[in-house]
Length: 229
Image (cartoon, rainbow, N blue to C red; front, side, top):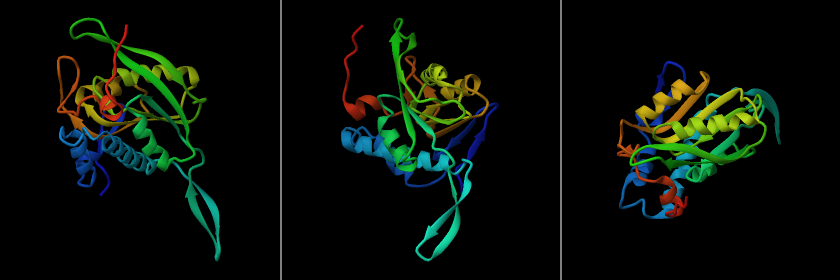
């Protein structure tokens, strides 16, 4: 049975969590405070869930027939006419990107750096201060970030990528999304957007962190960081 798709008013959301599978075991390890402290294991779980998301997305893409010659004959097999562009939001999406590259092994890659800039006790703005990306005009863009909390980072990064051209297709892939973040994406991303997540959590804290979530994916994957103004 394929993953359940949730039709939203504009973008579509596919939540892989709604069907049983090994995904739940990997998500349990990512969320568990006892297991997630193993940094290599945390990155590995991000990578293989990235692979799973990438494969599920691959089932929706358009293919063209191509002749393949074997030692004993030939046959027609569907092939992607063009590889997608994978763009990771630094730094937490890097292990996810490795999983995506196992599926789209000839894909071009881009990178965007986004972070929360505090404005007070609970308020913040999203700052995007770096991007590197190939030409996106007419291509399939896959934008990756493990945690979609408010959704504002994803929207800001997509707008930053506008300087590289308008993609023909947009896929957003995340590990855990909040309901609030998904609603923002469907309001502010293009109608053709397809959103794939491994889980949806309903709650955000006053500081806009996902509950129950799993913590800071970037810190768990690569170590804690210092913020200097």
